[in-house]
Amino acid sequence: MGWRVFDLLWPEARRRGRAVLDRLEPWLARVRAAPRRTLVLAGTTGVLLLIASVLALSSGPGGDVPDDAFLGFYCPACDRTFELSHRQFKQLWDDHGFKRTPGRQSLVYKCRHCSRFTAVRAAKPGPAP
Image 1 (cartoon, rainbow, N blue to C red):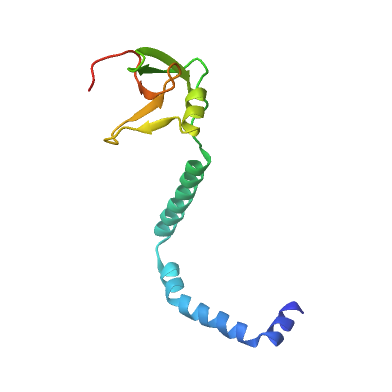
Image 2 (cartoon, rainbow, N blue to C red):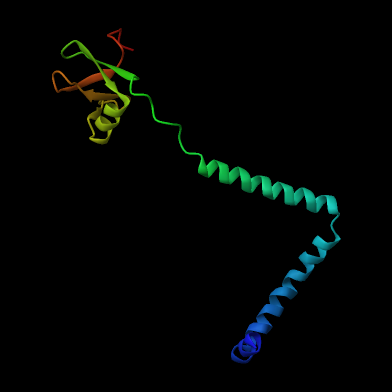
């Protein structure tokens, strides 16, 4: 009964559906005429692409960095070095505790000792690049 009511209320829907099927008929005829091997390969390729995209979207970044991994910094203004854990560095980054050099080629960070934006990523002082 449901379809009859639908057909009575919207008779043009049946005509539109038939028009869509008429437009798809040449494509469906080609698919029906295609060799079975081609259809199997196309289906397998589609399934593999679907699996690859699901895996790519579901796999996030790697696990957290261990707490005992530190990043070294050197401040030429006070001639001292200091270390930050990855969590502390992320907090520094989120708080915008860095500035770009005038040439915009590198970043300088806020020193923990003198509070100036002169610290650079380095384990210990070395020659300037």
